[in-house]
Amino acid sequence: MARFDGKVVVVTGAGHGIGRASALRFASEGASVAIVDLRGDLANAVADECVAAGGRARAYEADVSDLDQVTTVVGQVVDDFGGVDVLHSNAGRLRAGTVLETDLEEWNRTLSVNVTSMYLVVRTIVPIMQEKGKGAIVTTGSISGIFGEPALSAYTASKAAVVNLTRSIAIDYAKAGIRVNCVCPGWVDTGFNDPQFAHDSLSEADIGELIERTVPMGRQGLPEEMAAAVAFLASDDASYITGQILLVDGGLLSHV
Ligand SMILES: NC(=O)c1ccc[n+]([C@@H]2O[C@H](COP(=O)([O-])OP(=O)(O)OC[C@H]3O[C@@H](n4cnc5c(N)ncnc54)[C@H](O)[C@@H]3O)[C@@H](O)[C@H]2O)c1
Image (cartoon, rainbow, N blue to C red; front, top):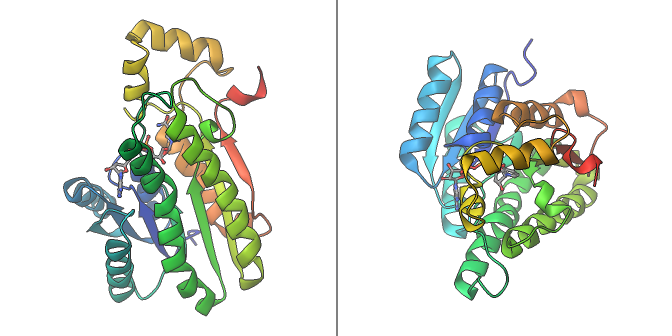
């Protein structure tokens, strides 16, 4: 029996990178997966991949920082699949910059996509889980939510908020049978960090040196390695785990 047989899983930002790997992982373990992304073309492609691999999936185009779009999409998912058992709230954006380099519009957009989206999606899905008396939510944080980083002000602020939002939601809904945990990836080679590398004018060689110097395991993580952690926390294997922040970073934050 697969761990997610009969379960409905919503993954946001599932059109690319970590979210795509998570969607494929859940589908491979028996779930019906709702693939939500700002880019409908990417969401469609991932849904096709899930189905081609023998899974059940459907694509939904939405900006998860917009309440109306979140409400509509979650309603469609419930109509299509009959409920929601697991949420992987993962959509995110990164733009590099110090506070002086980050204008208010940029600041607001980063906080909106990385944090407000979680508030909106969780707020829309928790009542569905409460009715069922069970649910699991995994948020995607970042090592950048645990420590400060140069020229990444809006992003680090947003990810620190994700970490503590996760803990608060976990406490508030533990007795409702809903577990909430956060996976904090280290470096993962999805192209997501390109604005940071460009800001610092890092060449491919510089990036390689940075990874080698800062990551004890000496390499970037794979999206599939993040997905494995997400699936564990969302599964009944983690039935007594809630409010936890799991670093999946190759040991990066284990040393100074
Ligand atoms: N890649 C890394 O090194 C790394 C490290 C730490 C944390 N993370 C976190 O992992 C998550 C995924 O990152 P990734 O590396 O897979 O990035 P990615 O760019 O490969 O994928 C992000 C996906 O989210 C979608 N998206 C962006 N804004 C959206 C919105 N408003 N509504 C719906 N979808 C939206 C994008 O279209 C894209 O498909 C992010 O939350 C990011 O902060 C990534």
